Image (cartoon, rainbow, N blue to C red):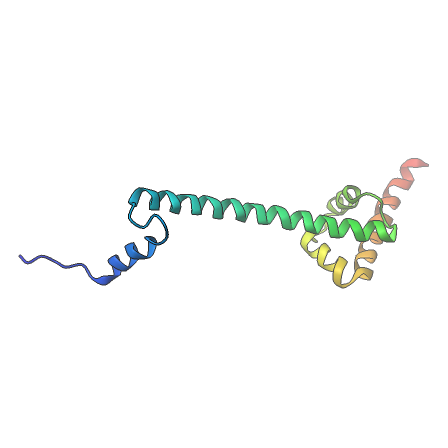
Length: 122
């Protein structure tokens, strides 16, 4: 039986990963690839963290500026108590694009919570 010659695809794949200063050393190529995958995963997680921080900062700034609510945490807590489906990303977009809508939402949340708490105080 004759020998099967591999095509150019496998050679092209190996050649593609062998670029840079360590092009002759197979072990360092594998290490670089692993490190690149680890860095990519770490940075994807960091990106989620950074965007969440940005959204929280935007919401907090708009809420405090208007004087609607002085605490971001209380505002979010009241939203969750009302079982609102609006997440932080949407709230941050509302804070930038349409602040009046965010003010309306926050006033409704506060009004509803004040109404629930007022009978208990009497």
